[in-house]
Length: 496
Image (cartoon, rainbow, N blue to C red; front, side, top):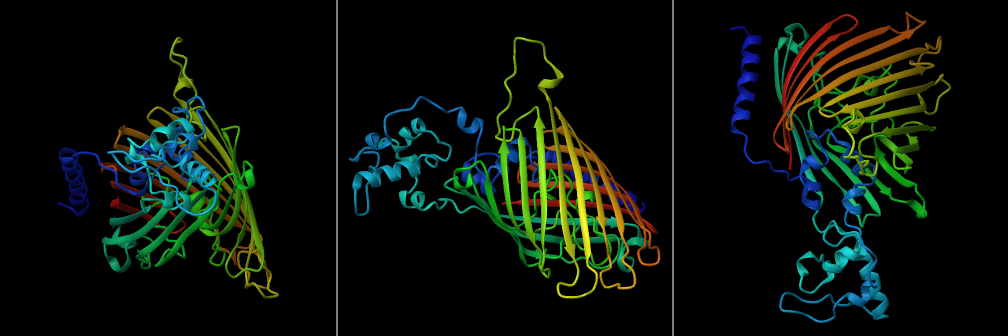
C-alpha cells in the first residue's frame, strides 16, 4: 500500500473511531467556567465564533441582549432597604464593613452587586433574590465584587498538535512527514464589573518552522515565548457610546480575527499576505494600538485606531465599518418571528458586510533612504442560511517602495487578494469547508521585484468529540509562481 493510501486509510479509521466512542459533551475553558455555559453558546466548533460569540466579543466579554432583557422586571424598592441585616439558619446576612456613613456604604455595595450577583443577574429585581438571606449561595464575596476582581480566575490553556504530509520535493530535507507540537498558549480574558474588558495571549511554546514550502502555519514574528496580545477595553468610555481599547492587539480591520475560522493551519490570504522581503505588514498582525469602537443602532459597528509600530518614528491609522442584516444583532438580540404567517427565507438568512482601510509607512526610522508608504483596503461579506455559511473576502494594496534600502529606484507594487469559502454543518459537531484563495502582486520594475501569483485550494473537515477538543483534517493544493504545493494536515486542538 502506498504512503498516500496508508495516510487516508488512517484518517478514515481515526474519525470512524471517534464517531463511535464519543461520550458526554463537556466545556471547561475560562468563559464556560465563569458564566456556567457551554462552549457552543458562542462557538460553532471552537475557535470559530457564532453570532452570539461575536456580540460577546464586541461588548468586552459581557453578556448583553436577550441574556439580560429576558429577565427584566418592573423596578422595585431601593436595594438598601431590602438587604437584611440579621442572619438566618441558612447563612449569614450581608454585613456592612468599613468606616464612615453606613447607609452610603450599603448603597455602594448594593450598586456594585447589581451586575455581578449570580453571574447573570443584571437588573434590580433580579438582585433581590441574590441578596436574600435564605439564598446565600448566590452571593459573591463582597470584597471581590467591590474591587472588581473575578471570583474565578479567568485563565485557559490551548494547545495544537499537527501531523503533516506533503510531496517529497516540497518537504525540507526530503522528509515526507512532519509530526510536532506546534503551539501551546495561555489565555486570560474577561471583564471587571462589566466596565472594563481584558484579553491576554501568552505563547508558552511555539515551534519555529524549518525552511521549505511545506509548512502551512503562518507564524507571526512575535509568536514565540512572548505576549502575543494584551489589551484593555473600557466600555462606554466617559459615559458615551464609545469603547476605548488600548494595548497590543490585532487591529479591527476584517470581519474575522485570524483564529475565527474552521481551518487550523491556513489563514485567509487577504489577511495574511505580505509584499516583498522588507515590508512585513499584514492585516492580521498584532500591533500596539489605541482604538475607539462602538455599536450603533444595534446593527452597525465602527472602529478606528492609531498604531505605533516598533522601529518606526511615524504613526499609522486604520478604520473599519460593518453592518449586519438579519439574524442576531451586535447586542445578541434576534428579530421576532411572526408565527402567524408562512415561513420565509428571510427568517433564517443573515448577511454581514464590512470594509476597512489601513495607511502606514515602513523603512529605516532614521535614514535618508526612501521609505515605503503603503495602503490596504478590503471588503468582506458573510451570508449564513441555516446550516450553510458563505464568506467572501477581497483586498487591494499599494506599496510605493517595497525595497526601502534601494536608492536607485523605488519599485511600486499593486497587490490584489481574494477568498471564497463555503462552510456546511453536517452535524452540530461535524463541519466541512472548502476555500479558494487568490493573490496577485505586480510591479513595473521586474528587475527589482519578482511578480507573484498564488492560487490556493483548501478543504477542511472539523469534528469536535467534546466541545473543548477539535480534530481536523485539511488539504491544501497551492499553485505558486514556480512550485506546486500539495500539503495534507491532521491536527488536534484542545482547550481547558
